[in-house]
Image (tube, rainbow, N blue to C red; front, side):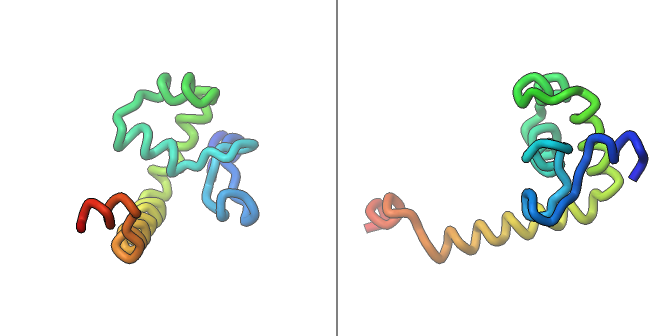
Length: 99
């Protein structure tokens, strides 16, 4: 990890499940990626809304691009888990409407 990115990104096993995150925060690189890539938010919007610096947002995106396969796989795995859980445990509303 470059010194610039490592200044802004931390990975510790006891915080956020060991996922890479903004140093000193509980905002993961994955969160920033979703906001930017999937929700179309600009780095400025993300920085303003979550009280981050632009350097932190860009460091998160740099970390993502350097570890894209790993983070994408993590997101796929989490999505699959959520879908399986939802199928196994439908909400009360779904159960009532389905009757």
